[in-house]
Image 1 (spheres, rainbow, N blue to C red):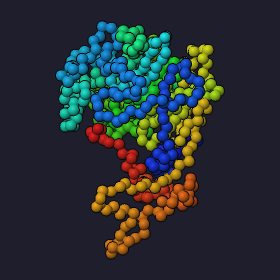
Image 2 (tube, rainbow, N blue to C red; image 1 turned 60 degrees about the horizontal axis):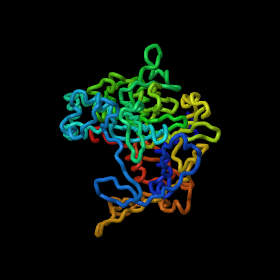
Image 3 (cartoon, rainbow, N blue to C red; image 1 turned 90 degrees about the vertical axis):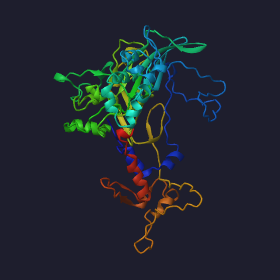
Length: 492
């Protein structure tokens, strides 16, 4: 991994960035559309040409004039012949706690859709891959919402252990054949239809395949089962699907009680794991695989980019370790000018990096098989926040951003603003302003050179970060510290 500029996003924000500057500067990065391989020429996207949809509180999908919305698939629709679709009217009565519910869910369309990839097959026929990020047990099992309110979710799982296999079968990926003949519909019983769940067998590929933390007895790679917390996605030029494993630590429990060697403890800490005693969905009370005390290395098998061939169920599903392990958000793929594959990825953990992977080999459309393992070797780069990505070459361009003073929100009539910028002594005399006087003039005088104002050190315990004085005040820097706090599991 190369990191020519190794400052993380937290440092960038504390030094140079404010929310208003980011908004005014248009610093947001829009996710690129997922397109089939046939649409790969590097041309600019056309502007969307539909009329704006007015705000509404109606309980229906509203689309612009000239467009229609059709229900193609619903949670629980059967993908294979011989399996009944889920009767949603019986869910509130406990249908998903009945015997056989998990096996049926593993053959039905999954829950909580996220990233989507489309792959052209023949005329009017497509293969569609859909991510299913996480379950919502309060909508699946009667009594869960009350257990959550009373902080008794682990007791619920102990009393109803069959709920965990159902949740595990509801996440992962669905692969479904679609056809269009006037309207869209899915083809039930198609040979392409299948589910990939939290228990589906797959394998590691790439440089970390035989890493000691992933290896089994005698240094051989341990088997890996399943994928979950699948957020955004991507499509490769050779027609495979990339699904991004994101907040996978939410599914593991007992981090607080686990005692591990320094290397394993560092891996947990760097991933943002270990802040809670129990997992979000309490799987560890019914499946020891998700208890880090009993299976300390299991959580390291998640947090990767997973490559799936939607057309060939016999081809192994591979977790591509060359693309790094972090809380992956998307895997947007483009071709560089010299034919290499560049993949852009975000990290969903607060104040982390943007990542770019560039393959060592070149894409060869005339030799499909030679492209199968292009993602196993290359260069993974991490960069701080950027204002734009240059197309084709995939190079990052650093933004020149500076602090802009926040405006105070309008206060209700009769309410006086609190005086936070000044302090009073015990005798009532005003002291010097606590905020540097140059803060409001940074745009006018300093531009992108706040270092002209000197530096100050943060006084917060354990921080000590040096920042330009014009960017430093108690309130903005405290916001940076507060932003790092995540809610406890029992607050979710």
